[in-house]
Length: 166
Image (cartoon, rainbow, N blue to C red; front, top):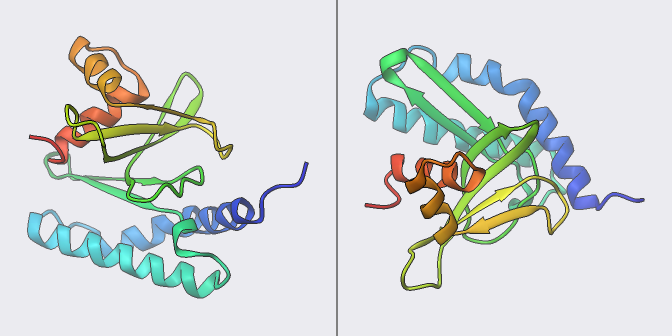
């Protein structure tokens, strides 16, 4: 079975990013725990990463660039970095990070919902195949409220923590 060329270039760019990310983080974000400085440095680090990937992989379309998610835990002086594992080019989706549950990696996303009762839809992608994802808004909220640990409830929790929902 031939692999889609977009997936192949995404994987190549993702692997490069993973192999060089620790060095970038150590250079750009070492020891910075001031919230404003951290915000600016993370934003600018993302810009540097995006420009570098575009220059190294000129054939890649912008929507196929792998995404990074930085999370600073100032109280523990820790920086968590997540890199998008699977190609997900659904427009207007925000990459929330990734998790591993029961031996499966999930990339977590949210996007605006068309349902007037729920502002966001949560997506948990677990493969490159277009049908390899879980999606829900009501399910994510219900699982979160019941304390069920699932990819969708974790996406919901991350969105809450990051202020997407009030």
